[in-house]
View 1 (cartoon, rainbow, N blue to C red):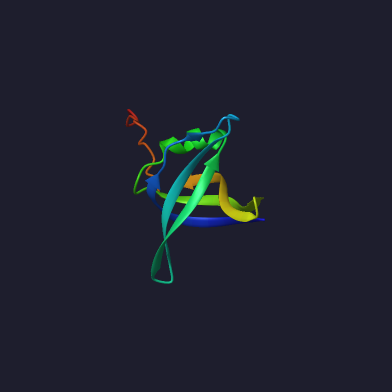
View 2: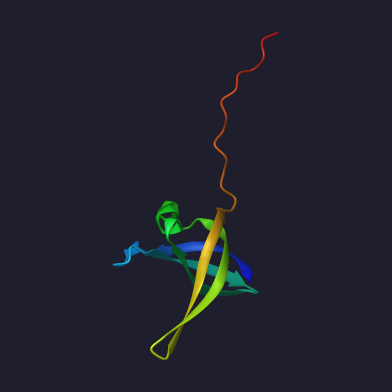
Length: 102
């Protein structure tokens, strides 16, 4: 099942690389819902961990993620794995045009 959240980037963590070669990066979003603001941590894994390095503090993004839960030694860990994101309201680079000559 997939979910979507929109928020401002508050923190972009460093890429963590494990012995297996697996990579992950945490990104914290500041999300406002019904007047209340909360922090929302999502994680990018594998090739998305590197791509998330382009995110900047203060950017508003819309992130699509899946909820994953894993058990390890009797403890359960829930992760919000982001698989796609878009920067919201990013100004387009103006294209230089010339006025037509009549």
